[in-house]
Length: 318
Image (cartoon, rainbow, N blue to C red; front, side, top):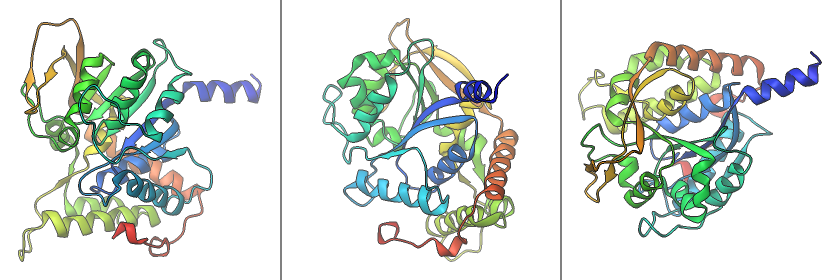
C-alpha cells in the first residue's frame, strides 16, 4: 500500500470530534483538553468555549481566551484545531436558539457527516451551543451524536452543575432525539475521583504539562476541597469531564433506557416512548489513567514545551 493511501486510511479511522468546554470553571476541563489533543485516535475538528456563572463575563469570550492559553502556550501548538467562541448566556427557552460562532461552526462541521458516519459532539459544560445548532438546523440530529458529562443519576436525576447552567438547552437536546450518551455525576464520582497524593504521583514530576496539571489541581484543592485549617488531604476530587473521551475510547460500559423528559426542576419524567438514551454505568479507571499518562508522555517526548513556570499567566486566569 502506498504511503498516501495508508495516511488516508489512518485519517479515516480516527474518531471525528468537536468538544464544547466551559474551561476556566474548574480543573477537569484542562485534563480533557490535554487528553483530546495528545491522543492520535481523535480527529479534532474544533473546540468550542462555553459559559458558566463562575467565569468572568462575557463568559464565552473569557473561556475562549483560557482555551487559547492552554492550547497555544501550555501545549505549545502553533497549528491546532479551530478554537471557537460560544454563547456567554443560556437559552431564554427551549425553542429559541442563541446565536454564536460556536453554533454556526458546529452546523458547518456536521455537513460532512451523515447517519452512517456521525460527528461526535462532546459537551462538558452547558449544552447551549449544541441546542442552538439543533434549533437552527434540525437536520443536524441525523449527522451528529452527543456524549455529555451531565445529569446526576438514573432514574430520577437532580441538581447537576452543567445541566443547571442551561436547563432549556438540555430540554431541547433531549426532545430533538439526537443520539445521546450520558456520563453522570454519580458514575464519575465512582470512576474518576483522584486523591491529592495520587495526582502528585501521577503527574507532579511528568514534564511541564504534568506539572501544570498538578499545580492546577493543588491550587483548586486548597481553595475548594481541603478543610479550613486542617491538615486533612483524605478527600479526593473528581476529574469529571474525561468521561466523554473514555466512552469514545471504549473504556466504559453503558445501559440503554427509554428517553426521559427533563422537567424545569431538573427531575426526570418517564413517558412511554420508543426513543432511547445511553447511560454510562461503569468506567474502567485503570485503563483511563494508563492511557492518559501514556499519551501525555508521548506528547512531551516529541514536542518542544516551555517550562511550566514560563508560560505566562494572563489576568483572565486570575
